[in-house]
Length: 483
Image 1 (cartoon, rainbow, N blue to C red):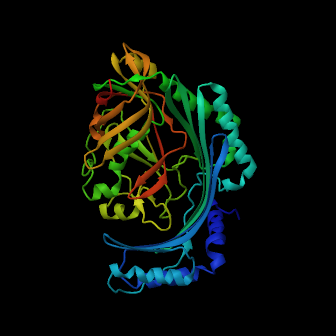
Image 2: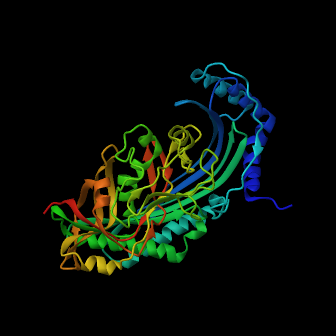
Image 3: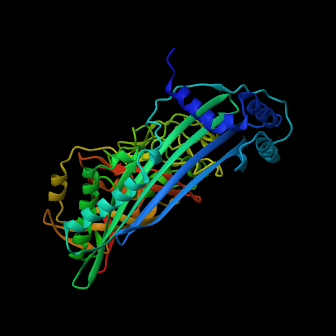
């Protein structure tokens, strides 16, 4: 009889998280018995083991290296809108019982319900369960950073500083639920980033590049390293020549790929279930309404193989899905975890995520992107008389209650008479996310996802995510500049 991928993952998780602590299924059922003695709608146990490392290079040498092991269990009980949560960095039956007792405050006494923990479901595995930290020797990791630095310096004598960081994580999670579902995942994650400083005639500018995903370190081949070096150095050199950005209301063309971070922040967070259930999002109560221009289709997809934001199952043990949020400009749905989907009586989307066993589950994005349209990117630029072409972004802020955003462009150019002319510096894009969606005039046929560098913050929790989009023309955005 062939063993399913989920059985293999559960076996790995049990050997790592349960068997060393003599936590067989019967003991987990006793914990649920204690929780079920009170009137609750749902409960789960979230076991986690993670091992991570980070290597940093600066001034030609690896100046720092870190290694961390973390493990523990979180116990959660839900009754109506109320959630009780306790966690422990000790995995043991006593710790589980103590945590279960700590969750009783939210519910009144009720009839004891028996939970039978069993394996259910066979979600499709989205990545190989490799241990990235074991895919490369320590000496080779140091050598990889050194090679990347040499590649950057060889490209141009104006490169004066190179800073690079390599990181990897191996995570094993096991989720046992009061409805009897037992799910597991083995999650690899790697990331390599580089920043260069270029100097000329007393002026200093920086450039950034990098990538990664749910893969091993073998992803960082010589060709990939050269690509990162080329992009980082090119960005720094472009910024050396940049002129002050103009200010005013104008047409903005967003490049493909990483500029999707604006979509993630200004639109994606506003589509998360908790904000909409509470009525605090600009999209609350607008299912079925037109919220964007025709052709604008936005999806959140946790099923993309090997992507940074992908998951085989979310942190509630549900398979991730491809969720259409906006279809041809019409709002179709929200990003949901179990609690908000139940309270809103809406479909579960597999977006329950948490930073670790010590954090509560929240509805969070995975890989969020806009689908491609019909236009050649050259056609889009050719139709702009005067505007800004933003191809890379730095930081930004957004207020999800009204959708207002401010984003700074890390690399941008002027468009004049249908041609990209000169680079500009200090450009910020200011607008309102829902309003900006209605001002999309042309959508490129060049959809790209980011290279695998995104991390999203919400309520003090950080999780890896992916973003993406094709080239977009948006009319009437406010550009803040210095000219």
